[in-house]
Length: 199
Image (tube, rainbow, N blue to C red; front, top):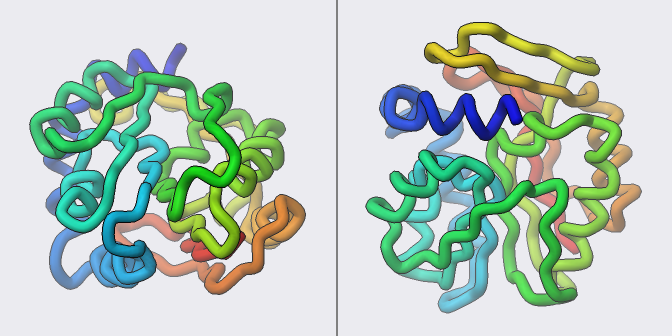
């Protein structure tokens, strides 16, 4: 699998690059702070596509964290950063959890690595995993991208697939969510669709 092998190869340089562009003063930082405020003290959070554990590490002081990623290389870094998190190695498009178990699902730059014809079903399953009133927080694509394969992304091949912002808003609503925020905002050279939605 291109995404799994790619992130295994680039885990450390990618994590360093993210730490630089998503720090203090970035839109991501402000967005994440607002997301953390939505999480109840001691709540159960799924970090879906946790990467190197940068977000999971911030969650750990206030919540119980399930950190999921397909890449063993990324999870090894997450283990060091977020030792209290429960790590799960799985494909986010295939994993299953019990209904109503999570207070919040975070999905930053993860669903965009899944074939877009699967996105509606993944969003529906996320809605099922959340307790009533729970939140989905993260980023989705904002441009029409059926399939993109880069030969050299931080030194490894990588794959993306996503819909435009309007389609993604429809998919989120169609999965049963009420959208709180769905804005296209540039940050760090990218313009994702920043999503906050309630189950």
